Amino acid sequence: MSGACCAPTSGGDQEIPEPSAVRLQASERDRVQGMRAMLRIPGGTFLMGGDDADAFPEDGEGPVREVRLSPFLIDATTVTNRQFATFVRSSGYRTDAERYGWSFVFYALVHPDARHLVRDGTVAQAPWWLAVDGACWRAPYGPGSSWTDLSNHPVVHVSWRDASAYAAWAGKRLPTEAEWEMAARGGLERSRFPWGDELLPRGQHRCNIWQGKFPQVNTGEDGYLGTAPVKTYRPNNFGLYNTSGNVWEWCSDWWSTTWHAADRPETHEDPAGPPTGEARVIRGGSYLCHASYCNRYRVAARTSNTPDSSTGHMGFRCAADLPRSR
Image (cartoon, rainbow, N blue to C red):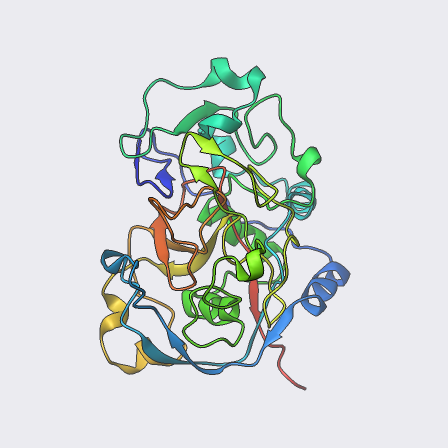
């Protein structure tokens, strides 16, 4: 296994086939209700990308460019453990973490009953990530923990392939990176965060990130050491919750640091990213982000992971096209 500080890669030590297509779908009633609960983003033109002084240019955060999007729908929150459990009960789906037999858990969150299940070896660039046998969405801190204690928290230990399967079952899809950023900005132009440029406006916490000295001490001043419930803190002007911090969110795009820099129609009009790649985009940062090493909870920040990778800090929200008028 290998990985980066933000999102370690799960694959590489064994090969497993892609999960079978989900044959079942949510009931028509549930799909309709799920669509009605989504937020309508009006589309139009916005400035995508960033050039913050503390940005990561090597991630391809820039250039700042004008992008035009068609109107679309997006979930107000990331998908919860409760919602994902409904999907699994309906479809019988098994996640990549369950099929691999392990997933990454932050060292300070490993359940006491799972400490003997930590695999040998560490992620060289991020030794705080531990590979724990049996860790998956059902047992987010390893065996001994349970999703039922975190039912309204974001589901984690889901790969891009798992997120795509859920979205297809729900009659939705994953957002493009451009859709995600437009929605996360909430109509604010070139702001660092979904609420403006100050991390703590009037001293108030607006997102779930790390406080203290990473990775030794988290003071939990924002109220949480791990994930927070999906409707924690104020929503942005479009009604989206927790697009900064809490969990990284999968997007549909293949990862590239250069594809979007070229001035051509496909990078400016409903961009969907490059046609191929090895990793998928994740956006928004997580509860482990800290200014001292990974301030990727800024709206323009981005990173990636392989489609079969899962960790205790990656989740997703869904998007959808607007229903066609009849």
